[in-house]
Length: 148
Image 1: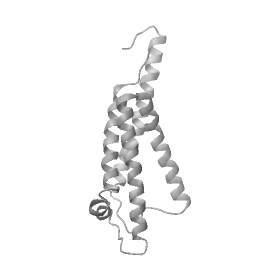
Image 2: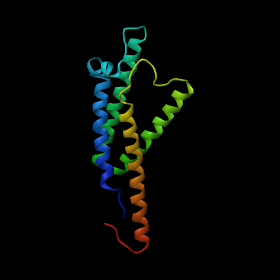
Image 3: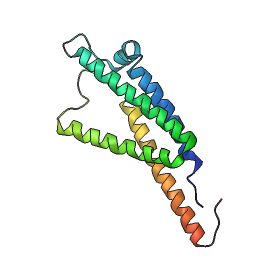
Image 4: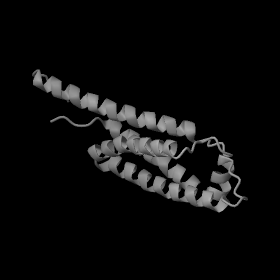
């Protein structure tokens, strides 16, 4: 029986750990780390709204982080599904941002943008790599070869 490769678990645990750090910065540490790092000016009339959105986003990162770590340790198939769902969800978010005419060219510096690009590419390559391994295992077993 073919199994998913171990690297799925490793990537899920690493990205889950990254999500927990990101979640802490966006939520618990929002005032001391998140806002200054992002370059937000929260003194204006929408300042507290910006903080509220950062905190709400941060707590979703904490949930995603715990889910990725748990699935990485217990269920590679579940981890792979979540790793596939994350880029799809962010693609939908990007389409929504575009639809509403918003972008990342406001007052803030958004220093996490590059990290998120790496995160998404890692998700996509992990999913594609795992599917390729599974496909190769299937073709090897059909040809009479055994892959262990």
